[in-house]
Amino acid sequence: MNTTTLVTHVTEIVLPGEVEPDGLRVTTRDLPDPAAGQVVLRMEATGVAFAEQQMRRGKYYDQPPFPFVPGYDVVGTVTATGPGVDTALAGRRFAAVTKTGAWASHLVVDAEDLMPVLDGVSPAAAETVLVNGITAWQMLHRTAKVRTGGTVVVLGANGGVGSTLVQLARHAGITVIGTASPRHHATVRELGATPVDYRDPDMYAKIREFAPDGVDAVFDHVGGAGLEQSWRLLRRGGTLVSYGTAATKDDEGNSQLPVLKVFARLAAWNSLPNGRSAHFYNYWAGRRRRAMWQRRLNEDLAQVLRLVADGSLVPQIAAELPLTEAASALELAESRTVLGKVILVPDPHQA
Image 1: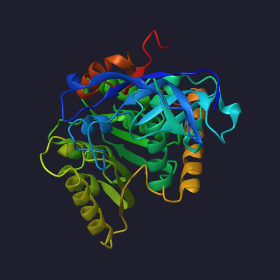
Image 2: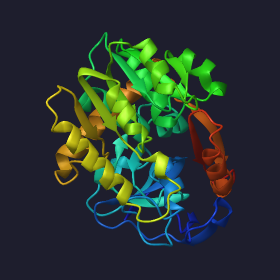
Image 3: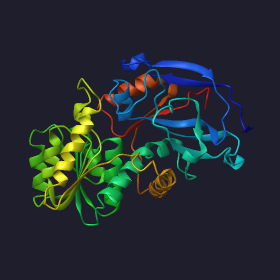
């Protein structure tokens, strides 16, 4: 093993089962040496996303069995390299998407999963736009392929993905209508979108007033009954991009059923001869062709980070809390009062 800093213990946040946020456990264990093709990453920032909120309920699609360490993505510095890994990686900052395991002071990851982070972009900023930025970029430019001059609707324009999507769209010369609670309307306007109250029973009618001829794309993370209303907002040639089922997050029963229902509905709409299309965005789609998939992630994150570096994209950081305060961070993220993403950072004694 090649190493710059030998770490023997790791602090982790364990999700023991279906618990409230205060049921999270702070634990320590020995950190194994990185195996061939792996590195040790010292966490500098990790996020609290909708994925973790669903995992604690046992409702996230394809989550591992309890107990496990949550944490969908991470930004950190390589402190050790395993056999077969370029030792020049040590001391450099990278991002990685882990799906689980990132709520830890240190973690072992595959070197091929590392994505470079530009100098001048802080760990918290990079973390805020890591999965959120790649998701927003790919939905806008790879899935919907909205052109300059188009109009789109972003549901949850105050959220992690939503606030990023609004900024990317505006940077591309696209008009944005964004839903959010009234407390966030001023910020949504500052980001460049026209805000609409998501709790207004006439929300979709209000959106149509701003775009009477329909819109080029709707980005819907809510699902549920409102998905059909999103579909109806599209003009001919428009695209519905569904990327979540937040409306059913508290429903009892099989966690896969809401997603499967969305798949069926989108397939049915795509069979209609009306010139519109519907897609379900899945960050992990294409991973079977690992090299091509990872190359695309690297390209898209690089595009996003360049916009962060030049000030065109401002990461919306709701709060930064120490790792061992993950329970409070999760409660805050679930409160529906924040704008942007809640970030976990190292505890002071570990920084």
